[in-house]
Image (cartoon, rainbow, N blue to C red):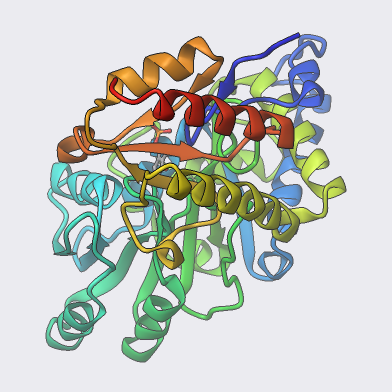
Amino acid sequence: MSRLILLSPGPVTLSDRVRQALLSEDVCHREPDFAQLVLGLKSALVQLYGAAQTGFEAIILNGSGTCAVEAMISSLAPQEATTLVVGNGVYGERIADMLRIRGRPLVEISTGWTDPMDLERTEKALRDNPSISHVVVIHNETTTGRLNDIQALADLCERYEKWLMIDAVSSFGAEAINFEHPRLLAVASAGNKCLHGIVGVAFVVVRYAYMDSHPSQADSLYLNLFTYRDAQKRGFSPYTPPTHALFALKEALAELRTQGGWTARRDRYRQLSQCLRQSLAGLGVPLLLKETAYSSMISSFVIPQGWDYNDIHDRLREAGFVIYAGQGDLYRSIFRISTMGDISDRDLDRLIDVLSTMLHKGEG
Ligand SMILES: *Cc1c(COP(=O)(O)O)cnc(C)c1O
């Protein structure tokens, strides 16, 4: 049977195993068996990065990735002290908006969407502005697919004694995150990107000693990490969770473990991405950024002369593939392909065949 292949950075193409988990028996979230499921998921999420098991706990939320990021910002970014946002894309700007909407003090160090983070200006801000206590960054900036150098930023946080929070929505499960770093406070992500579950489960992996010693900053009932944390100590949930999405995530995490964990997933993504990037370069479709800037699984390609995004999208869609447009000003100039999800070598070969036939025929 031919299946539609999603090349978007979430939702992803599901494996049969994960799809099958969606047919699990109905369950009520006030029952003890459900609590066991939640407790199991909480530990599986921290086990994925071995070092997270010391000092961190996973708090599970209902929603897409933005929910996890906003709960992290709402609950942990201080109301009185300043949060520094280091951004180079749509998702960094979204975090600055989350702070602004709450009237929280912030400093924004942004660069253009195709540029790396500005660590020089960041260091200067950290040095000159003693009211900054927290720093936020996007790990894999999905706008372009750039993997930001969070280790360098974490080291600045160590030098200036700031807490680091990371939007790892499109990297958790497939890129390195240094949970041994003493200044790492929290990492927000979701089940439907590199973990290959379905949309509906978000989570924040957070340093528990910090939560024990700091009051909640939340100005929202629903996005208060502390409330979820208390209820989840026994596996329960303060609000009705997306039960079947949790079954899917459990299965997806089991599948990831049998496939060799996050490093194996990163290697698999890299293999697919390298093949795709080389093939498209051969067809005269260059990458937007230099190749070494990219994460293992998101690529942004410059739309070739004579084509527009919709032509490329529609032709691929007819052939059973869904690609992803650029955001904002990049809508006209790029398209994006993510190799997240259950994508086989055959799927990729067929994609490259379709692209090469299409582009050789010329004009869109
Ligand atoms: C997908 C994504 C989000 C969350 O977006 P949703 O639309 O809520 O899923 C946040 N940050 C990054 C970097 C993302 O890739």
